[in-house]
Image (cartoon, rainbow, N blue to C red; front, side, top):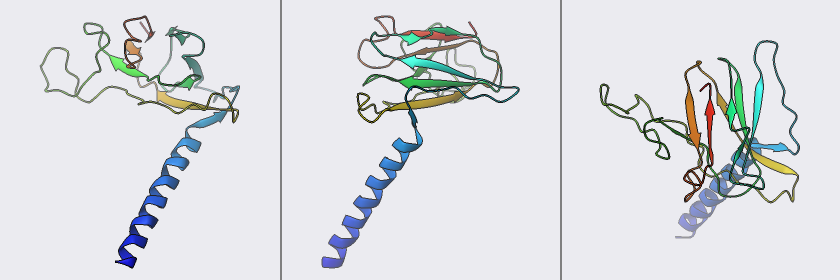
Length: 154
């Protein structure tokens, strides 16, 4: 029994450490300085901040560029939708079904932000694969319906 309890405690401690590592990997010092390579660029997008917005809310990106979403407030997501069904996540579906994608769309989930206390900001990077238009929104509550949307290459 004692060994079972010890094993459970070690597993819980390892899980907690894993979560901490994931947050550190997804965190950057604030303010962020976009880095770039000769052919590609990092495009910073502020998520939230002082309003229910993505800033900028429209970008043009090339294949190989990285959209770096910087979460400056709590409880926001970056979620992909289709132009004919805004504010609804892209879900994997069968080929030939109107509005269905072969794979699920982009969804960051909620990215932690500590209110700036540590000088860190949560980030979510999305590589741009092509020049097709992409439609993104915040899936928190009614944020999308209140205008928290953005486009890429639209």
